[in-house]
Length: 231
Image (cartoon, rainbow, N blue to C red; front, side, top):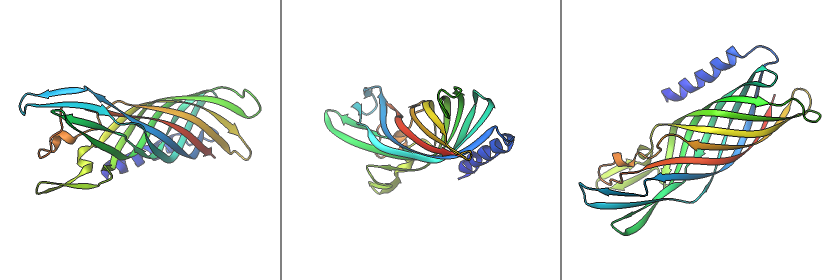
């Protein structure tokens, strides 16, 4: 919870800094997405337990994001973009242990996300229409997770929250082109595409000593369509 408050304070501080009239615009957006995972390595031999693990990523899953976006334009054609988003991400992995399986683990991971992006945009290519491109990184703070649809599981005599199988902090590299159409009364419509490539390991399941799945990293990526309105 403290991390969420810090993320909100960062965003509010940015707004205060960028409050000069004409340079800052605020909006909302909704982003349906396809999320998929990358798993490496594909095989791992645990010398201590004698278990051979074979890993594979699951297919793409339908996810979404929603939030507030803030653009601060230093000049007409470049500036910075940030905001505060709620992001549902994650796909998952399957594992075969000593040729037994596969055991599938579908991850649905919830983050509060602060994007830190550099924005470039053209002049008006036709009346009131511009093309933009954003790139940068995100800071994502875990707020919840489900594995195979469950918030908790019973393993032996212990009840384990599945959010413990996910690292608390996450970061991604973002590439996002799109178009911005100025309508009237300062209202602008946004349509874009975002590719987010996970930089940090998501999986933390090897911390569970009763059901140890170890020897791999999982990175979550997604491609989204971005629909937004700025004021």
